[in-house]
Length: 252
Image (cartoon, rainbow, N blue to C red; front, side, top):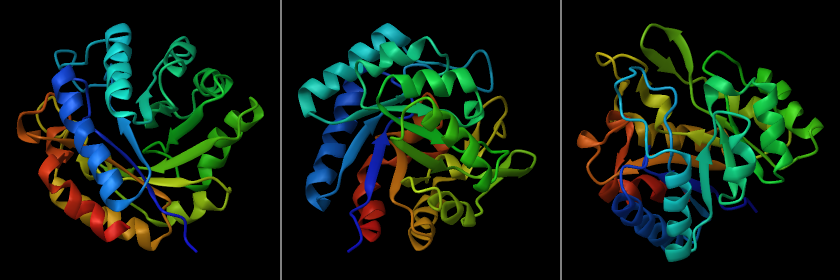
């Protein structure tokens, strides 16, 4: 019998505590409604924004406080991304899964530091790697003493300001024996394609998810927002919060 899929859901960046509570309430609701594991995600620092003038987040200390408040109120498992090795141990005290950004998935010291926390490590596949290439980032985590791994597909760059998804990457990564997650929202990005910001088209998110299911994805990553058109980061790609149920339904 196929195991139930897991879902990593939340707003791209921490805009306010109130936003996190609003989205977390919905995440908890869909977890109960569909009887699936859900993990709440949001970033305390978007360290790779296209422009230096773009909003990055509340920072490490305040962001971890906001995430801890979400866990206390809703009891949800948490994940967030880290960008520097020193952040791993501090963030690992609060979250259940450490996320390694795609651009940084070959940074050995970052992977080793994440592994040494003993927490689950979700390594997002770089836009310049194939699924088969992800054996080596995964092996760095394992060789550092941690085999609790998730590998996440999020598209490849085949031209300027656009991504395409080769779903064979999911099949190839599953051969390593770890759960494979589909990042349904970052895979519809158009990086740097919106005048100093990343553009994209959320229209394709449900199709990305269903296609990933056909290739055997074990989980789905989706960023959501109650008003994505006015979000402070990645708005064009995020699922509207009130649409979340109908995006998840075909996947369970």
